[in-house]
Amino acid sequence: EAERLNQIESRIDDLRTRVGSFGGIFDYDLKKDRLEEVNRLLEDPDVWQDAANAQALGREKKSLDDVVLVIDQIESDLNDASELVEM
Image 1 (cartoon, rainbow, N blue to C red):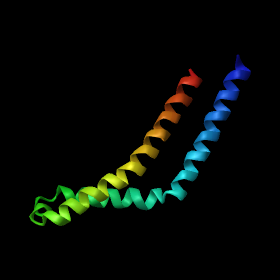
Image 2: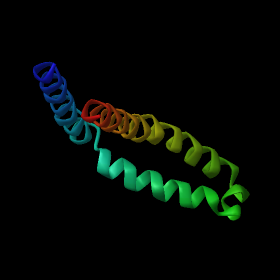
Image 3: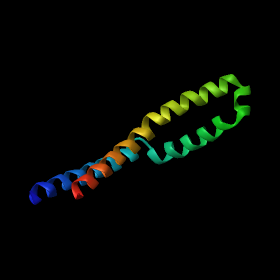
């Protein structure tokens, strides 16, 4: 059983490494920073005075969410799996 747990932990570590490389492929750090900026802009009530700009920001937010939130969720799931294996 210990050998099997070691194999699982090794696989989780391998997946973590692969997910980490996704960040570079998808410009994760840049997109995460931009997502934070877009969220701040959308929180400003004045942004809605320019409907076209507000809509463009909304589309950009969706596009950024598609990358950032998915990678964040995968990393969270891998951390959860690792904690379960350690129990």
